[in-house]
Amino acid sequence: APGARAVVVNVWATWCAPCREEFPEIVRLYRAYRDRGLRLVLVSADFDESLPQARRFLEEQGVDFPTFVKRDEDMRFINRLHRDWSGALPATFVYGGDGRLVHFQEGRTTYQELERRVLPLLGRARPADSTEVHS
Image (tube, rainbow, N blue to C red; front, top):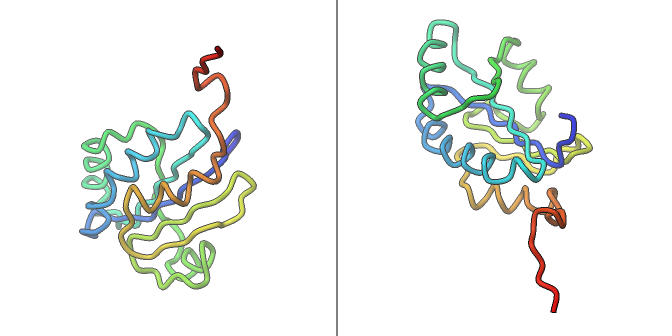
């Protein structure tokens, strides 16, 4: 992603309860740090027949940016993302701006956990983002 300092990729599905539980926290983290270069890529593993529910869920969560649907064959998709990933959902991947994977997590994540992984990649806020008082 151009201009990205960190990219969070989250693979989720409407039929996955932990996915739905963590989802608002992931979106909240994205909103908190997108101005500092955080990008969020959401990949639904829903089957075609449940895509209407997936779209409705995204709307309810206030997701107003493009998201993706897994179209690849399961094992190929899984291995392409991470060879140690069992395919269990949710799955979250954190990449640096250089495209290098820095964190991979299977199962539910939290705002705090993701923030801990993402902040070092975002670096310090640019001076324009902060007001300094000079005496």
